[in-house]
Image (tube, rainbow, N blue to C red; front, side, top):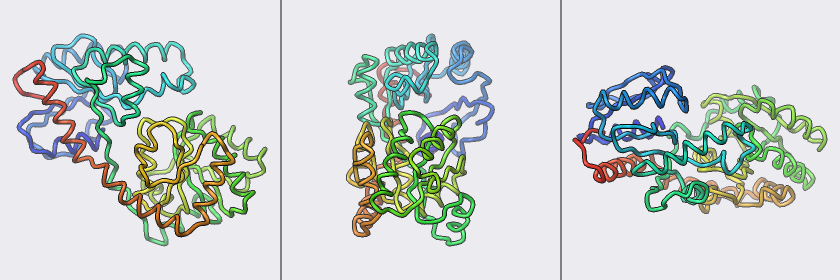
Length: 358
């Protein structure tokens, strides 16, 4: 949301904005725009305390429209609201949230938000369909606004930086990259099985998985040993953004075997850094990757492994995917998302007119 908020504030409108931020993010928004006030709230996201504190803040500051960026709205509030729901992962993929009580709270609060909000913003047509499917929301009240991508993600050309990330991660040869936290829907295990097929076809590469895996690390190391690919698997753990850019830029290809994504930022980040993408054909991924990815059934390790091998070994195909990736990125712009978001604010406010302060 940081990129979106900064883009909205840069539009130069006559609206006034109050940013309600947690203590850890009090200075996270970088803006010199006029008409912007910051307020630090000690209430945690998704907490009961948030339900108590936010209505008081909205009344005290005479807020005319409230935008919640994390699907949860105060059940009682003095003004109309817009809510962003990126996806319904915990409803569609219950294994991602093991607590039954947590899933119940998630469903109840999200259902209340879609009923009470004047408008719902989501990030893909796929997520819109799932919000309607799982929450019974009125599709006419849901606006799809594609996210942008961070312009910080550019190809790293510096040979010393590329050598440095290889050395840090123990990468010994060309490599296939996947990034992301460990969740069953991310399909890390399916990727390992596909990589086994890739190697059997004659592929000569390391498989680099970047990101915090927590309990998944032990499971993946065990599976790699079972498949006989341990020597080729590199688990980096957490990497910072500069290291991540270098990993994308040095990869022979980026693999995205995920089975559920509300949007799929990593696909765009890989394209922005010049990596060709082999991608699952499920959920929002074809909508985001467009014609710039090579699609395969990520539930079928044989098929996905063969796709990895083809893109890895076919230089002409790789070049075509890289060029299409650069073109595809033009569809995702924070400035456009900001203008569309402001339009949603103004439309929502027109349904229940107030004084004109957002």
